[in-house]
Image (cartoon, rainbow, N blue to C red; front, side, top):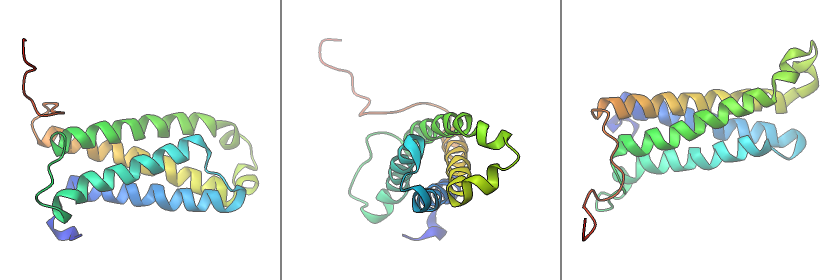
Length: 145
């Protein structure tokens, strides 16, 4: 895994994925759970890391679509999950003692939200850098069509 071979969009996706992993660890240490949105973003962070690093680690392996299309799909779902998670913590944000009440869970959850949004932004930028054409699958037409 050579970070110097990654373009800026891929690096941003890696930073967002690492932030999500750190956020899940922080939030799970206090209550034993990162919430449904946190676990979803953790799975998506692992998927984003696989999309970014798999071509580098295994050059003979082909992805089931273009890298930008896969990154925008994974990052888009992560960003939507982050927004839903943000809606879930608005009550904590609204209270005066939200940061004191939540402790590590609250900080971890905010990191998860930020990482999910960064993954979404990185996916969108990589998708636009490839020309903005969504390509998933082999691109071949099925027989009889």
